[in-house]
Length: 232
Image 1 (cartoon, rainbow, N blue to C red):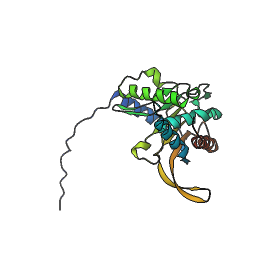
Image 2: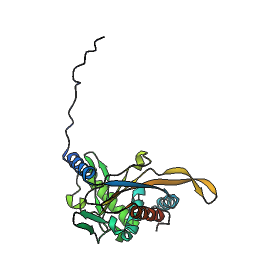
Image 3: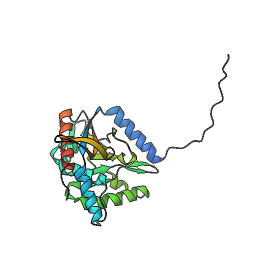
Image 4: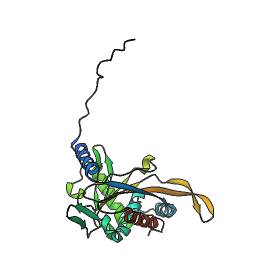
């Protein structure tokens, strides 16, 4: 039997947007040049859920998103882990004195990374108001370049889409990125009991030129511990 190949399939060309090209170039550079490894931990999120539920019941505006709580937790602890609030250079690490955190925002043009400046000096409600405005600007195509610079660390979260865990791609010259999975009820051992509790997976991806596994584990453990305490 002779099988005759068919003609080339018809197609419609979807051209790359400038933002999509920039994302491609940046992630290609990251994968090519950075030796990356990842660490994953499961965080009990009962305190986080209780805090947000109470704020909603009290009519607080804006109500912080779960991602705002993650950013706040990172802001509260990253100062104790200076290698992760830093930029890699061939000469050495630039340990940043300000805690500026980027967070991923999905837009029609691609993912943008707005920056929350001096995040460690802001309350949860201040941070929530700022991320809401930055997200609005990003999705309206009005986010200035100056609001996407000078971050020392990035948080990316696609948990709301039902993804349990994933690996983020480091945004150079940063040294790490935190990927946040879906918040849902899972079985957890509490004391001697098995309970269904709200929890989520956090995955820290680290530039191995800048830090080792034990240092990454220490940061991730502190983020988890902060999420498991009460929020004001």
